[in-house]
Structures are given as structure tokens and as C-alpha cells.
Image (cartoon, rainbow, N blue to C red):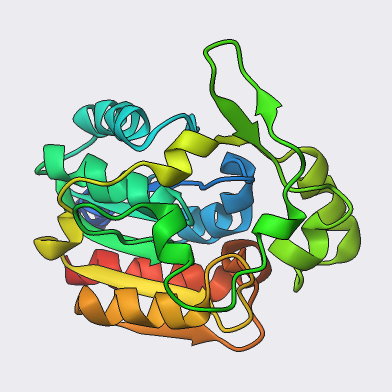
Length: 258
């Protein structure tokens, strides 16, 4: 009997150790928000990823300049495990495209309604390449900064329809009040070599995005030879808020493939 109990205990220990090892070997997911949003925009995606056993961190993107923001994210990645899936939303796509160039631990990129610029392209330039963006008329008057730059916000009363049309109105209004501004210079800053030219990438966006035209999303995904592109019918610019299941599912597929 004692031998039987010992065998059962040993089997349980081995199973537990194997399970713990599997948990540890899952890639770390690093989420980078874009302009007019903040790290809380990933909350529901984070809940799903953590439920499924993924380590997750949502970086607080400074939204000051592509180069400086990419340096900040790259510094975070330097302290991450050897396998990372880097995810960017909107302007955050420009940031992850730069940051991943500096860190060999990034094994996959996921673009969530995001820019995927190549060398010499800016977010502002890409958003105007195809018709459909209605962002500019919804911007509030720029806020002058002490360094001579300008901060940009979306007018709060126009934020729900422009940025988050498929999010409950009350929630969208809270997002409008807490939106993070981006500098005008950051949106016009040209990118260096995009990491998506070397790192496998995945794309998800809504076909009702009013910030970045859906045709632009399709163009960038095709150019990057996306491993999988998910188009959410009726999805706004914040599909990670309105459709967290679809976004988390694609991130997990990227994590499994890397």
C-alpha cells in the first residue's frame, strides 16, 4: 500500500512539473497601445490571455516619437524571456516595427488595427494613402508644448463615433475622457526598416475603422505577407476593446506558430 501511495505521489509530482514547465515555456505577450488610447484598452484581451496561461505585460507607450517610443519598448523587451510575441495597436504598430529590430527575443508580431510602415513611411502618410479616414476633422485644436511641439486629442464628443463606434456609448465616453494624446511630430515621423520584413506577422482589423482605412490595413497585411489576417465585420478602430476574443485568439495563434 505504501508503495502504491508513493507511486501515485510520484506520478502527480511528475505531471505537475510537466504542467508547470509547459506554463513557463509559453511566450510572453507584450501589448503596446496606440494614440488616443492607453494600456487599459487591452484589459479584456489580457484577461483571456492570462486565463490561457500566457504571461502578459501592457506597456505604457509614451506617444512622443517613433524612435523614442521604440527605444522605451525595446528596453522593456530587454528584460523579457527569450520568446516574446509583440502586439501593437494603431500607432503602436509603428513602435513595435521599430522596437523589434533591436531585440532578437521577438519571435512574432501582431498588428491590431495598426500601422506596419516600411522605411521612409509615417503613420500620417499611410492613413492618407487610401480614402476613408475621417480622423483629422475630429481632432481638437492642438495643445502647444513647452518644447515647441503639439499634442493631439480627439474631441471628446466625437470620440465615440470616430474611434469606438462598436463600443457601448458609456464605455466609449470614459475612453474619450481618459485618452492619451500623441504628438503631431510622432504621427509624421518616418520609420526606419520595419521588423515585419523579417519577423512573421499577423493582422486583425475592423472593416468599419474610421481612423485607418480598411483598404490600408489590407494593403499592409498583404505587403507583410501576413500569416493570417482577420477582418472583423463592423469593427471599429478599437477591435481589442469591442472584440477581445477574436484579438486574443489571433495573438495565441501567433504564439503557437513562433
